Length: 510
Image (cartoon, rainbow, N blue to C red; front, side, top):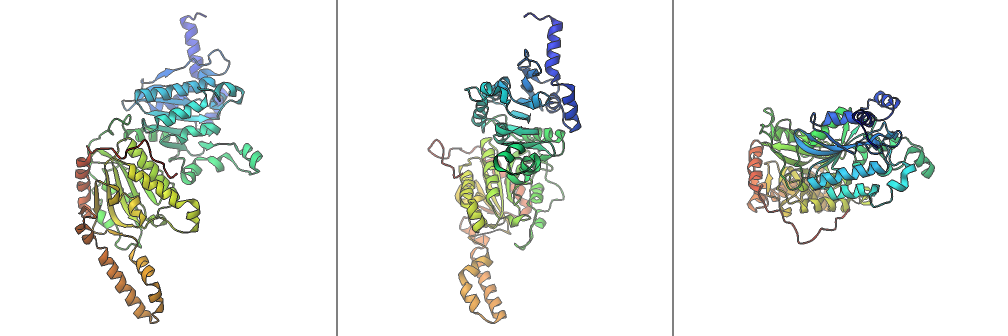
């Protein structure tokens, strides 16, 4: 049919209006924005170019087939994006919805720009399943494209409502996921389906709400109070990464560390006394540049992006405030994924070690601590970006290996004067070697004197100066000199050769 200007304008207005007013009102009552408002808040004004606006235009009640796709710029840098329109059939997927999503991911991949997913979808339309589900351009092709794009371009998701059934894998394949508390959820089966299949009575919030995924499962990375906060997370995340794997991270204006930061004062002399590694990181990096990722999950390990003299770095640090900084199954997984992310996008890695080692015991053995620890050590080994290991206080046992110790080809291993490197701490070592002899000494004071003497002997054996003299560590640096030392060493390592092994890929111990 032929359209005149007025008819085309009416068609365009209907497509952009989304679903019925009652659905807009229902979303507003929950604090949810219209999909197109989310796009407008995220991207630079006037930069959005939409594709597929007239998808399913001949159908009744399916404007744009429930998804907005197109290209734009964020802070002047090109991106591709998709945004589910939950006012249209609850943001569910039809055949053209799927095709639009596939096309925009393919465009992001082929042009080498980040892909942003603004997700709010009830999943597939069962009535359209033959058209959207099984075919070569069906929903599975979305995930295939995401996997192909992973590590090639940044992929970031902001989740504003449900991400249901197979659709839950869109966030899962992204680098990071920001979830809006109270509205966002991810689940493979609804609460009704769970009760029908397993008999369990639950709710969507208890099973797959934002708090659950950001603090317990680790599938979510940022717990946000509002949609605006989630969109800010998307912007900030992208500000640390290049457009694609062939480019370098964007450089910012160099900013000094906080003036009041006293790194030496932050680290207690006693190993038994915990300190917050997040404060240490913030005192070391450019002021206000630390962007922590997965702050609520596996808190014994702190990860995130920051800047040193304006250059982006990825930080992995043990936090003794939580579980003594011991590495568990979840923290090993957390580190593995972040290290791979940094290595994919040319972000140098800084390891700040204060680690007693991996957790021991029957519970963690049954959870596969060896397998998960091996996965972390694999990621550290395979990372070819510049990486520096700083032993802030201790690196014991396999914890040294997991924090990019000397055997894992860091560009430098730096020790602070407080550093200790050993198979285990002095107390555990003395008990392991002399347990029977200690038990045989009946006099309490004599026993204490024996233990103290053996501990002192052990401490001399692992003295940091001895380790430096044996070239185990490359430098012993005072805390106030550490930042400048890191800036110089990272600058020197910037052009390093990135080859690791003669192969297609390893077999990861997942």
